[in-house]
Length: 88
Image (tube, rainbow, N blue to C red):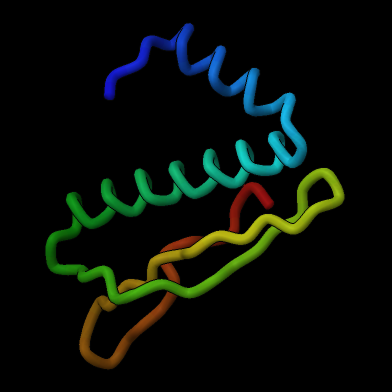
């Protein structure tokens, strides 16, 4: 599906009016940004392999946001998270 910016804005506005709507939208936006950042990182670093997920959380508007963060494998002996937690 392809939506215009106006259509996306309208869908988001309508969803935000629902119970837990803002929470849902924040969760979706954070997850989408992390996936996009990870895809770009893996594209620019083909020697690095995504190696599963770890779970993370943040608090927003008095509610807990939960998200998945990809782990990366740089070498056979090294495994660490690709997300720095910036912005939280």
